[in-house]
Length: 618
Image (cartoon, rainbow, N blue to C red; front, side):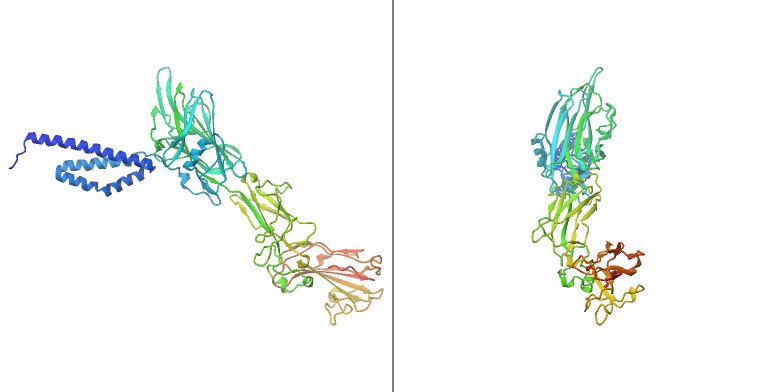
């Protein structure tokens, strides 16, 4: 039977539609706000929240549901209204300020050679439980960090409490204060200490976020009540106190400005000084009341001065929540090296003491001042020590022993390593490493300096390969070869034309390293040639040849004296005297650069004597 729709029926349908729409709005509002609450507990920002709403709407096929309901129960207008309601609700979600935005600095990596850290949830609880003592952090892997939380009230009548706050996933510390007047304040300080040394630890990129910075002021003609939160954050560097740097947070209403009370030029976190007397944040870690700061310079402590931004006659209970979200640690500096036998793998032997062949000259690892681990070994002696100093004779305080004996372990023989806290190198541009050798030992020749000056460079903390090279006497780079030529005295003798290494090899035939086959008659002359060679691979500086003539009192030999011609050097700068020396001949200081190719560099000193012989210059 067909039913005709009357006006009464239309009114009933219209009323039913209105009830349904309101019911649908209520259901959707409940679903959306329940979801928002879940998102807040997950600490997802507003953009991520909208994205999840969008994804869930697709997953649940809400559009299809609304289409189905509209096609079966209601007309197209109700269908469109339902879609509009849902769309508007989602837009509301997308523009809602959700809790907790991670500090931008916390998202960045630390610079090279530094380690990143932040407080873990466990750290917040332990910091509260430490009751003002230093607490070793849990969320600072590889950072020797201990933190102390201390508070100091400007007035002993301030009612103060501290507790754990935030959310399950992102903990914070809550500071509740009821100040007696608007000039009262609370200093909240985080001190940083090296857990290994007990000394102050300077941290880079320290970043904090302070939440629930709001205000609620009620005024009358004679007084005002409530609060107007103001937080000024300062840090202590090696040069003194500095103000923090403001970090903009999207969706936050907090500004970086001075307080309306007093004349302090340091800026702090507050709401704008406008006509709005109430801006009260109630949600945990609400972004709209989040103020974030950081320090670009290393600091050893951070202090939050919590007070009011404007004059209030009767301040009431006010609250802030604090999170320490990031810090970077500059590690201890390491100075290390090895004391090694710089022989290039050539064993010391008396038979090769004067070898100037390619065995030495052609071996680029021999006497080069560089530790070649494949061919050279470390050296140990119980009295061989390394000292780290300030280059002015004062030792530097180190975590490892100073001075220290080199290692005797088979795997690290001759090695040493100093670990120095960053605080001990403050304001220094250099350090020095001093090798102290035993008074009696085999390695009497240095291939490197016993005093190494190390320039300190910003952001460099590992100073390795600070090695000390040594060789035994038979492996010295400087080789002196002395040869002689016996002749009838000739004041006009030309040293350069005398045959070298004559055949047969006899000093009466030319310069020879062999002794004469027969005694030298008194009144004869003996000319000498001393050749100085550099067979190693390090430049030799400030060499000087000294040769003393023997006298009769020494082993009953005939006394010898210098005779003309005047001594000569090759190069000529080796000897610049114009008269005969007396007793001892001494060359000028000269250098022998390291060889290029397989031929050693050389300098030669010539001189002539009468009677007797001279001490071997080798």
